[in-house]
Image (tube, rainbow, N blue to C red):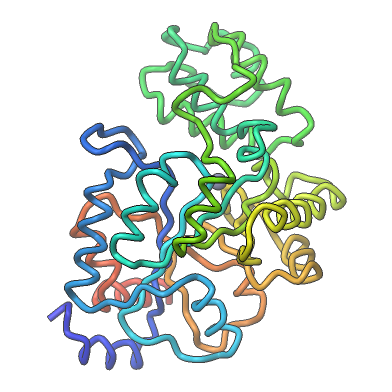
Length: 331
Ligand SMILES: [Zn+2]
């Protein structure tokens, strides 16, 4: 029943639940499960399911153009995006999307592909993963960040607490905070990204673009937009686009806000993007994209869903049953 196109179409018209835009981050090599990373076989199973059950994968460009034109999106459509520009996304994930002829938009941090810097939040992850210490509790910086539990037993939890605390700071103090964190963790942050944080190259991007992968800007530095002064914020938006245009033939002028939570951007960023001629922007608000005469600002804060880690949840996200449930819970 879930796969019935007719029922889906009726439900879609009745409830207008919208299209899921999925986002992926890191992909692990096959058979090497890692926390927070997608296994390529799981991605393949998801795309296989969509193909078998006659779902249509549309590009983000198509989705945004339909929203601008106020055209209804057909039922059973899904859309895929990837954030950041790590090498595993080029080498492992992109070929899976190409294998299934499924459009995907890859948002890249230009500083990372330009080998200028690796992102501050990746450095936090690396410090926590690499530290041989059991706790950072006694360090002044942990107290300064307002973190109560500095034990490294739950690396994921500590990493998130530190990253969330840093997101509230003025970006100018972040290098010093990272240095203090590294000192207290007994590690030295390498200038160039360690093996697990290697970016894809612009050449990788050009090869993938030729094969149909779409690229779009995810800022220059991955700094939180709402924490930047007006000039730096506008610079990130314009420079990221300029740099990507210098390297690629046909990038998509849609912005992906670094970390993308509601607190990370606002009206100021939306106005700056519009002024710079962007077509839209994506966030990480976990909802379906709807096309019922949305306000223009909606296209500059499009919601996305993290790709579910298991098939049951994925199927529910792609089916009208889950869509209706989501619509009702939002009322
Ligand atoms: Zn990102």
